[in-house]
Length: 168
Image (cartoon, rainbow, N blue to C red; front, side):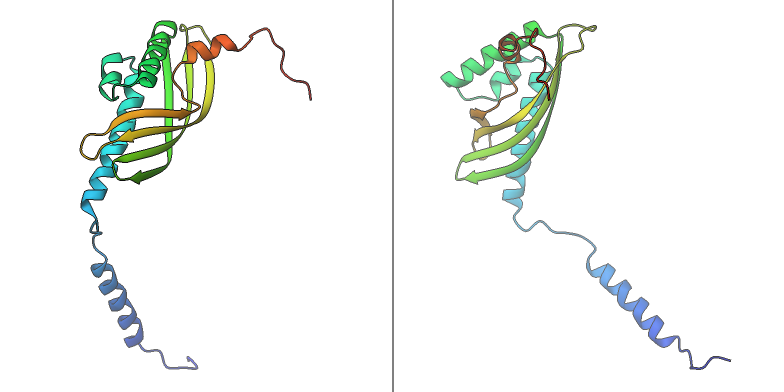
C-alpha cells in the first residue's frame, strides 16, 4: 500500500502544458528579412571568391572585384598560383561580419594546401584576413588586408626550404 494518494491530474496538466508550449514555438520568423538577405548575399560572395580561387577561375574571380590597383595585384598573384600549383585546397571560416552603410568587413580565418603535382606533399599555410566588400544588392570585393591566402607562389619563394626547424 502506498503511503500517499497518487493522482493523474497533475501529470496530465504538465503534459498538456508542454504540448501547448511546443505548438507555440513551431516556427521562427525572421525579424529583419532585408538584413538577413544581405547577410546571405555576403556569405555567397565570400564562398564564390573561395570557389573561384580553388577552381582557378580567373574571370569569375575578377567579376567579384571592383577595379582597383590592389585588386589587380591580387589577380596577378592568383594567376601566378594557378600556373604554379596543380591543386589548391582552401577553407574559409568567417569569424565576424561588420557592416557600416555600404561598407562590409568580413574577418576570415583560412587554411589551405597548395600542391605543384600529385606527388608533391604540398605547401600548407593558414592565416587571418579582412575581406573588404561594398554593396547592398550586389556585393563586390574592394580590398584585402592582413594575411591573404592569395599569392602563395610568392610566399613559397620567400621561405628557404633548406632552413632547418628551430631547436627547442
